[in-house]
Length: 391
Ligand code: ATP
Ligand code: MG
Image (cartoon, rainbow, N blue to C red; front, side):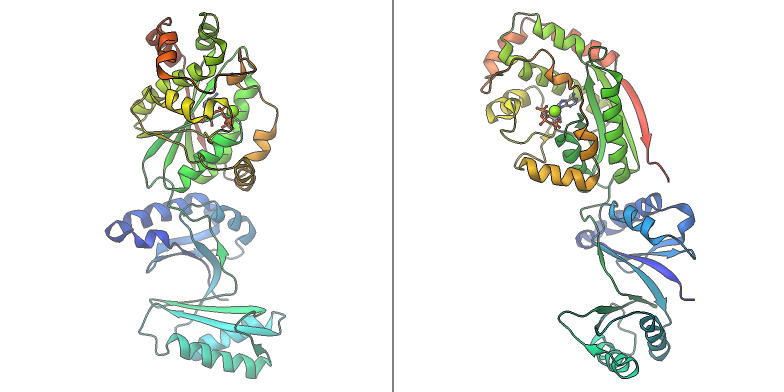
């Protein structure tokens, strides 16, 4: 029996020059966290790839799902390790092909190790001729039924028939921490995932209006964080009570239309303090320009003005359909589609202001004990750790 391996390629990371070992080490660790412990015996960086030696009978379908969620992988293949000898490997390839049904084929050899006596072109030609002669199959370079990939890396030769797409990006945890403002809507989970896929570790903060809204609405957020934890293996969720701030704003004689901007400014101030505590370097929101009243350019300016910390908005230029398509692909859409009570819809008018000015909101906030309200919310914050479920 040939040794089965999972062969992983990571294009973007291989451009990272002197930092490459740093990215490789994190990617390797993440792959090990993602895979079931009993599915592999070793996981090693191998000349710009990662090679995972699989145990006999390891479930490829279960692994495939997990590997697809590992950020930083360009593509991967379930491969067999072949003997380092052309005539022995040819026999193995013929044996493997004999069990497959096909009419046309091609050989796609790639030689990263120049010591092997044949170059890629010679392997393609000689192995191609052998398969045609011995199995009576026809070469089709353009659209073959079977593509026989031979990859030579160091003293390892891999054989695989299918290259599968990974989710790309950079390994989760290689790019520093961000604090992601998360609701159970469609947008903020997608925004968080985009940052994780670019290598960040997302710490989550959610503002809730309990007991005005139910515990169930917080459970929705937990469920979303659990879904996102598949991409970063462990997460921190901070739940912050927001009801007192909402009540205060809505009873302070402030124009109704400005409430939502004021809510958001408080969220940003509190988030900034939490970010500092949690060593996060930036805030992340799911804002998409013009999608709702709080997301007009004017209101974004008025909301951003309360913090010097960068606010990253990875969805700012995206359309809702695309956001929902991504939410579906990453597994958060079904949770977001459940009815939930959003703290932000509390005490809000039908026609919120779309063009708030900083002067106007500052004038309103002068009526409030801003620091006291922030301190109260921070004192009530609860911190939870969520780890990936190992099925
Ligand atoms: P989402 O789909 O993410 O809820 P949305 O389209 O409903 O976004 P808003 O409700 O205006 O838009 O929220 C804009 C952003 O503010 C959200 O994407 C999220 O980052 C943040 N946010 C909104 N509500 C909360 C909350 N209760 N707790 C934490 N962050 C929130
Ligand atoms: Mg929302």
